[in-house]
Amino acid sequence: MTDGEPSEKQTKLEEYFSSYEDLDIHKLMLTDRPRQAAYREAILSNSSLFAGKTVLDVGAGTGILSCFCAQAGAAKVYAIEASKIANLARDVVKENGFDRIIEVHQTKVEDFKLNGDDQQQIDIIVSEWMGFYLLHEGMLDSVLFARDRFLKPSGSMFPQNASIYVAPCALPSLFDAWNSHDGVQMTAFGAALRAQKTFKPEIMVVPAKDLLHEGTVMAWFDLNEVSLENLNEFVFNEVVVAQKPGQYQGICLWFDVSFPTNDEGDTVTLSTAPTAESTHWKQTVILLPDQHQENIEQHEPVAFNLAMRRNDENQRQCKLELTILDPSDVEHPFPCDCNFTKCILVKEHLKLSEAQDIVPELI
Image (cartoon, rainbow, N blue to C red):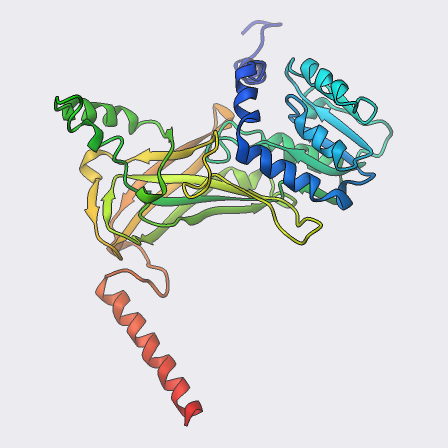
């Protein structure tokens, strides 16, 4: 690289921001009803929190979340958008009559400066930063930078908490669908397609009926406290007990985010689970190689190690690494509902112990 030429890192960052100038991306997000409804309800039902407050909207896009904040009574909203879509956001703000409340700044939040020497002037940070399986292609790093630099110690984060879930699942659309395609067996094509997809997570809708478990938490964090270092790696290394029989063909990931308790004492949650209304994030699936897929029974233990790590070459991306484990070699939860003899004996022993403790009290 010669002097004056952008680095590979700078080029990737510019490509990331310029990608958000595609209006179809914003149309996808604006027409995502669960996304829109969750943010609108979380903000408008918290009018007592927003009234008269100063808000920072990180990655404002078309400015719709900033408009929600103004509708909720915010006195000032700084809408930060690094891409040229900021020009359109200004038009949206103006046509809604909020141009005296909302200031749109076309800049990265890392380069944004508030007036005055005291940087911690923001009462609330609002952002829709989530990517596939929560962290991939997301901008949480920028949101945390804004939190640490601008948010008052008593300030609020919208959303406030985030969780990543994992569950074993069946994937009939990738397996059974090719047994007969227009009357022709295409299993060889299906096998080749699956082999290709085992190298990269698949973004797809997983019907709730294809989950073999309701989902267990892989990671949870509080946006008020989580650090950048906390986000470098998450590792799941546990036994999950199948809650129904089926073909174990992949691992399904999804996320939930929740917002601060509103004026009615309720918590608004945006869920991307298979059991919730579908969103543009869908679910993320890690496909098992054919030799590892198997038919499992209810109460059968499934063990795997799933590591989610930052991509050193692109900090906005994550790498997923899945290792299939032998359930007999992994420590089971206590107590465990699986069909292993040792786990059944432990549960029976616990029942007996509880019964013995209760009997004297009954007499």
